[in-house]
Image 1 (cartoon, rainbow, N blue to C red):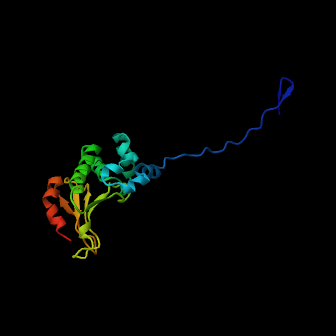
Image 2 (cartoon, one colour):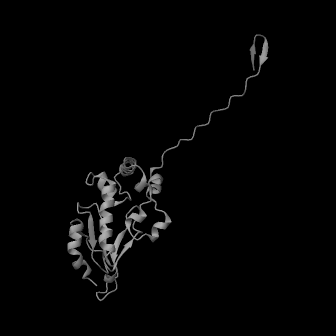
Image 3 (cartoon, rainbow, N blue to C red):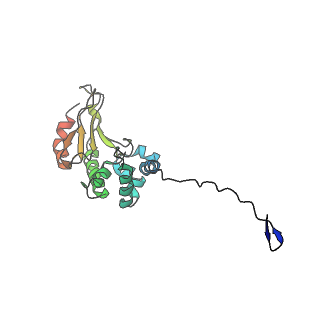
Length: 189
């Protein structure tokens, strides 16, 4: 107690201050949520039907900023091929990537034997499989697969049908290159 002009004044007890919790952004969790697809994506028959995650709908500059933040450590980050290409400055925009995917879908969905597989690796856009190349006369367990890539400016890779070790991808020179070589890729059965 202290004395104030001759009378006693009671002061409240001073509580020791507790350290405030320190909140730090959990960029990894934020990114995981950003690329997460809804459950209905499993029934998609073309890439446009799975474009429902945050990376597909949020402002492109926000998506790119979060991706760059995630990639700052140098470790590979699960992401759509087009986002990696945009981040490297090799593709102009997300919409350009969507156009590439949609053109491949238009070509392959009209041809017998091709099926779209929406459940690719985390963040990826899915891929196409040529089902007659699986378990056909050649005996391959894994069918010919067409997928989009940021490895080269043709944006399309083909993995030949195989049974053992995954072969090196064949770089295809864009949609025209894929169209020109489809007969060759479909010949493996």
